[in-house]
Structures are given as structure tokens and as C-alpha cells.
Length: 227
Image (tube, rainbow, N blue to C red; front, top):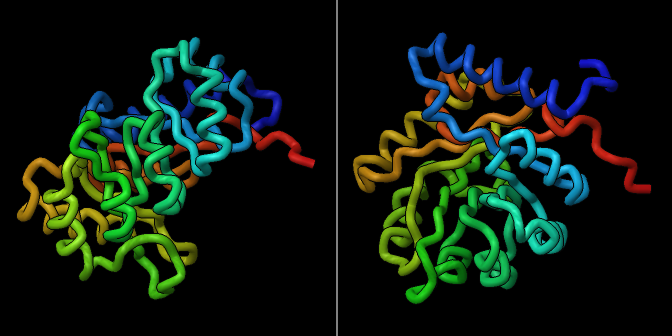
């Protein structure tokens, strides 16, 4: 990908690839939500994206996200929190996001719960590795976390989220996510969403049923120099 391609060109290229992968899988591109992850990029880039028709934007860190959301408060945007979230930041994050994709423990669910606020879309994050230090709940712990989500006021359980582990063929990893998603649906029939697929592997995720893609550099380009 050339570094001199424009934001509009990169967005169009990714959207074309999403549509191709969806059609090859017998799916409609309309059932897939493309979230543009804008971490390390300024609010000005978010404004450009909105002019290009983007409505779903993702952020990884509260400190950066809250400032950007405030700068873009006049825009018709839906913010998705896609990074690891500390429980003590949960209430602050809840004020500006429409969805949290990285719910992975009971304490975070309880912190996000609110019986007076509008429902918050939540995805339960799976850890597909053997490393307990990675974010996410192991698949065998998912049903317990899902039951807590269903019982927590102000939480709308949408489905599961995962990152394909390094060193594993992405499609195989996403097939495992799809299997866990089907198990979750037995418990929570409404929780049909799968948040999976990033810049390098979103086509494989679509082929395994992903409904929400978290795409950064393939659209935003190289991160600005933070030196």
C-alpha cells in the first residue's frame, strides 16, 4: 500500500475488500459494521472520516478517547471502546461510548452497570491464547460472565470479541470464536454479534461470521510520529 494514498482511497479500498469477502461468504455487506480505530490520530482525522461517511469510530485508551469525543461532540458519531479497560475508568468511559468491546471480568461488568443510564452495548472478550496475562476470558469461563452480563442493569449483551493470536492462522482462530458465539446464543439468543477482524485479517473474520470489524492502519494510514 503506497504511503501517498489518501484517506478516501484507503477507506474505499477496505470497504471494497469487505464487500468482496462478504459476498464470497454468501453474506450481505450491509450486515457488517466497520469500525475505524483512530488511536494516536488527531480529532481532525475523525472529522475527515465523518465527511467520508464513517459513523463508527474506535479507541483503545480512555485518556485519548475522552478528549477526542469532546472535540467531536458536534458530529453524528458512535464511539466504540476496543482496548483494555480498567474498572475505575468504566463510569467515565460509559458517558461517551455506545459500545465496549473488551468486557472480560465481573468487576468491569459491575462497574459498567447502571440502572438509570441508557443500555450500553457490550461484547465479551475471549482470550484465545494460553497466556492468562492477555486480556479476555477463557472460552470455558464465558457462560458465567454472560450470565452476569444478562443480570446487570444497563448492559445489553451483544456478543463476543476476540483478537486472532500471533502465530495462528487467523481463519482457524475465528472459527473457534464462531463456535463460542454459537454456545453463547444458546444462553442469550440476542447476543449474535461477533467483533473480530483487524487490518490484516478482516477478510478471514468475515468468512467466519464477524459482524463488527475493528480496522485501524489499513484505513488511517501510518500512525503520526509521537516523538
